[in-house]
Image 1: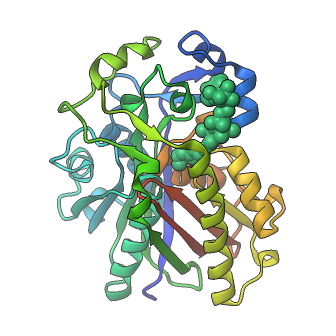
Image 2: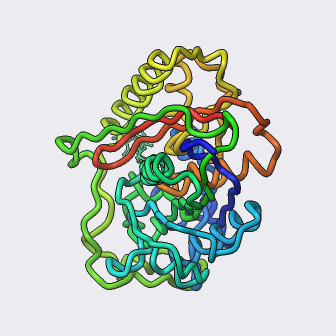
Image 3: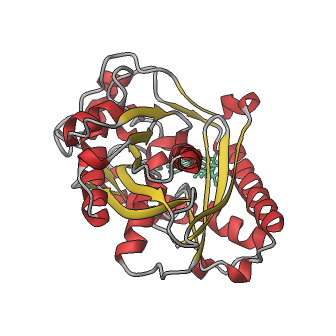
Length: 334
Ligand code: UT7
């Protein structure tokens, strides 16, 4: 067994409630046409009662463990990438540990916004270098709807909720994480930020009563300079992909699929164009789920996996960008 992280199971959970653009038209001054053409988003999932971040993370984790064929007692470590855990302490990861009964694991959260899952995956890979037998649950989970200002059309149309998870362990073959590079630039934090939660927890409200959430979240919603975030995202993700491939001596022809953070379909098209990758090689779920931050990539990975889009030996790229700024890229052999 090598010390390279390989994925032995994937899982995801998406909330049941589907908020369409048409419904959003009743909440803020927007239109289905504007949202679709500017973002590619047609609907997003909104968490309701019983779908708090840790609960969705738990369901995604159970599904990933089922696919991996392991029990919770075999887990050594749980890492959750999230910026919308329902509590600051304990961590979301500890709540997941409790829910699944992973008594012998240690657990913690990673705060890297939309890049949280890839940051967590990289940490798992580093642990596996020393202890390839470890079994590690890596999760991205978010309830962004609880922190969105539903009167701010610049942001509220973009975000959705969900969770995705992977069980990773040391690779017995040449599959797994081949290379990665993470980046941050805290100087640009004001372009995309979210204040600390003003309350212990922004409670989910009944399905269909989304604007009610403002009562609980006043003054602590997203701040975003959309156009600047857009430009930085395309440039930095593009540079990161190009630099990693050059370093590893790989060309984009060798890459089967890019699974990116799902921020905006135009960002993904611009990225593909910039690095010269045919858009059919970019896996997208943003149309259905919107931007679910750290959850978007692992949930997309699980969907691609269950659809049979990933063949043994395929070279995959994971590319992320989010608040901080944080960003990163991973080269993975399936
Ligand atoms: O994970 C990272 C998180 N964030 C992102 O990835 C966001 C990156 N940025 C973007 O995706 C895009 O910048 C947005 C989708 C947020 C905005 O698209 P844009 O093409 O940059 O539009 P804009 O901000 O320049 O706004 C154009 C117009 C403005 O009206 P005026 O000033 O031209 O009259 C906005 O007020 O569109 C207006 N607008 C809207 N109209 C209808 C902004 N939001 C909406 C809306 N519905 N929801």
